[in-house]
Length: 243
Image (cartoon, rainbow, N blue to C red; front, side, top):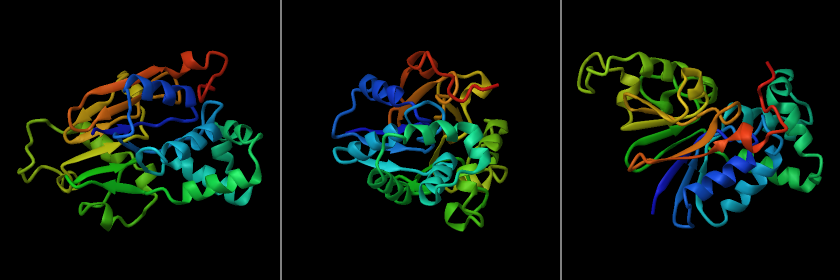
């Protein structure tokens, strides 16, 4: 049995299916998704439906990302935040055209059941973006940080690798967990097309929303699996590359 952590999907169902094929996922594998299932490519609603079905055969943990919060709000109210609509939300709305009201309700329940973070038996934290409390996620003052914060990753990137965990200089935030797995900030922003590791933080968002691939990592062996680039799987679309 493996435990695979899977990065931000952003409406790329073809990438998700390809990734699971590449990783040769079986029903025995535990799958931990770090959020942002929607917004970008044309199959956001289809991704959610696929994940609902996948959760019936596999032990799946779904972390909520900021794009999922926006989509959940739209499913509940019928109104979309302008910032959301401009950053992939419009494509998500259009992907629901063929879905019934009952199916939309099922998706709303699915979003509502998502976790803001997960801590496993080995004290590994899985979260979409980050947190700011030096005492860990349970002491976080603003839960929005769980799906918007970038300072955790920025701090990890700038740390001197020679500073050991028992040092007084080692940040208390990072001492709370043996490892931390995040998405939210694409590694392609740093010219890396594979998951990045800084101190004890693993960033597995490899830019599937843009020009990158969808990635998974075996959290025990650190073996990485990747789909083809989403821009190649959706050659007639632009995803979130609207610039």
